[in-house]
Length: 142
Image (cartoon, rainbow, N blue to C red):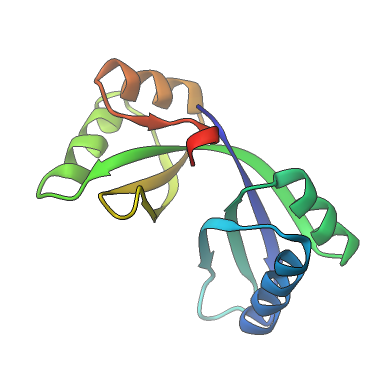
């Protein structure tokens, strides 16, 4: 139920992001979800991505000299209705977990959304969601 996320630390966000998408296009790598964040007072940004071929993506990025980090995250289905996100966050908050960051992605032709989450204790987060019937998405399905 863990999903491998690739993060790239970079400057010149638009130029670098375009370059990464070109590299991935040439290598046949699909970006399934992404988040680009950074503070407005600094040129440094973090691009987080879920891709369909983590190993190849990392090799391509490192070959280009980029600073790359791979870590596990989880993804959970969120109903497109009032309270859908609240239900997921309520489960996790009740476990006393600390959320590091989150981003969303379209999933299943937009019938549902997928929320990617990062926690210090990922196993506890997965267990809490599964125990409460929240549909955690396996990496093969994402």
